[in-house]
Length: 486
Image: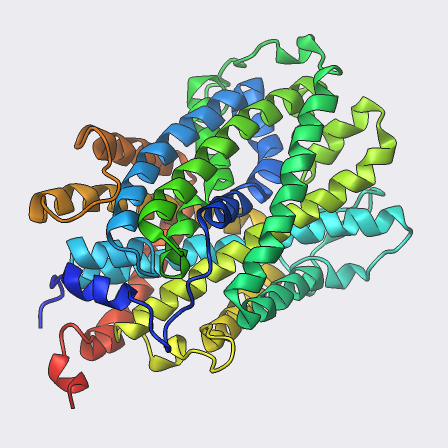
């Protein structure tokens, strides 16, 4: 048994064909773009933009967004080629299985838990913060012990400081509700996502249009604050660190590729969904961050979990404040929906390959969704959302995603060498320049993240390697064909 054995492309394409027991193809190209936008615009834009500006880049956070977008674009081009070649659920995990072998596929599949599952948990915590702000407007205040984790300090809008609660109950509630919706069906989930995407794109545009005329040009001086003498604290190193922070805001475009097996025309729809959503969101991000740092001095966003609401307050449009918060909640909801869906599809595919127990690939007889996987992540993600501080979650998600992007970029170069004549509905341009550039930028962004993020990544990966050699390698269908032919 070889841990480097690759899964033949013919086998992967066979798995992509629809059957009565398989996943249902219901997603159009438009739905895939909406799925991407739904996953991208959320906590990164509405929460982390202020933190990146206050702690790292100042008004030049716009440049941080552009830098992060360039790295995502290179990786996105590589994702698009793979998704058009291998329209199978599983995203980067499946691509690695076809190019770099089973062990690397396991590594990236395990790594994707950091991106999707913990990404959903991170957004769940931010969702709860804005919900508290909305409830406070109507005089509703939840018990302090039930609105934040034991290791977190939370400052409420009325100035009350909570030094650790028992559990973040609102975050657990929304994760549970969306997991149950995903069990109901992909089409139903996509329909809700389309509505939520329209709402949150509308509020981003309203924020940009209404906020633009209230911009104070003095807030842009200096545009790139002088470095404090510490790497990552303003200056150009601060812009790079800011890019590593706001990179979280772009996480999600790759989640489109996890739905390849549910796309009506994956060869056409996958590239459109991945690259289309990335372009739309980059334009909105740069304009949004430009307006936000123009409305309020960047240093006032320090420690602010709701910077969009803080910035919009200076416009005088008080009657729109509640609408803004409601729209942000809608945006967060669509992000969690796509993240939870992406994670369940990755585990579904890994289970079908024998690397995880059959439990994870059982399809509901009526809804034709991997419902047991959805239930598992309902519990798993809820625990993280309810008990872990949002800052720790955010950095873990970013470093996990960047690692996945690096491996996908490597995979495209390997596939071009191994299978140069394989049909490709979309070809990544300028290979090897594009994948190499993607690798360099993603590694640079990983380097800019805190040392604690690296330590957690190493621990998480070590745990995954143990699970692979204890269970995955012994039960792999690719390495144990005789076991499954009986």
